[in-house]
Amino acid sequence: MIKQILLLFIVLLITLNSFSQIGTDTLSANQIPETILYKGNFIKAIKWKDKLGENYLIISETDVIKSRIAKELIKTTEIDYISKKGDTLYNDIRTELKDKEIWGVNYVIQNDSIIKLWEIYDFIKECYGSLKLDFVEPPIVTDIDNNGIFQTWLIYKMNCSSDVSPSKMKILMHIGNEKYAIRGTTQVSLNNKIDIEEYKMKFDSNFKKTSKSIIDFANDLWSKHVVENY
Image 1: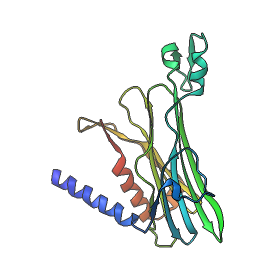
Image 2: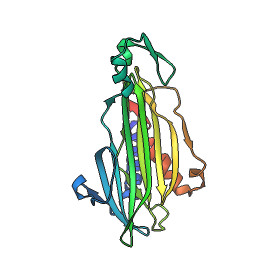
Image 3: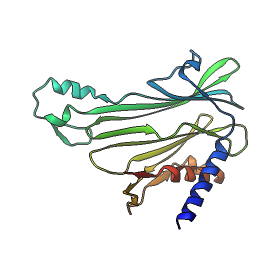
Image 4: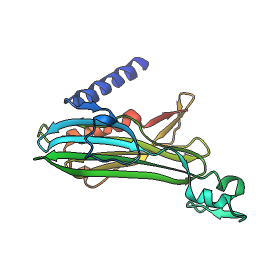
């Protein structure tokens, strides 16, 4: 059984890698043209050419910072505060509220003009537990349909919890400026034992219109990251 699982995992990695090797270049922050702007702290940038032109994809984030409301509540003598979740937060908790934001942006250069093809943004605000909002791997670029207009893939997880619980996971795929999304939850593994609770996963209506090969790739990508080990 263990050998079969390892074999399936190796096949999955080979499948994912075979789709993604299409000649992207990794850039440092100082290699990005000054006219291409991004928000937050630089994480990763890649560059490639397809039928649309010369593409730049950048992912970035903020640090985990104290929420604005927490800074304000430190100065007050209020007994409690109702959080965005509807919970009552008392003085020892409310001043620990935290925020984080992430971005992804794709620019394309066409005939010496720089066009913002798409931008994604997500955040967690007023978290009073353990905050997680991270891309789980660098951007992936594929040409699964072999039509010369590449697909871009971003995968990230987000969680704000005081205990061990599933995270939200999102896969956002773009073809040109069209966005396709998969949203759901992860599956928790404690001491190498997977929680029997099934994870949730839902393709948006736009994604369901894509080709079977793209959907198969998306399913493999989801399977690669769905289990979280604690």
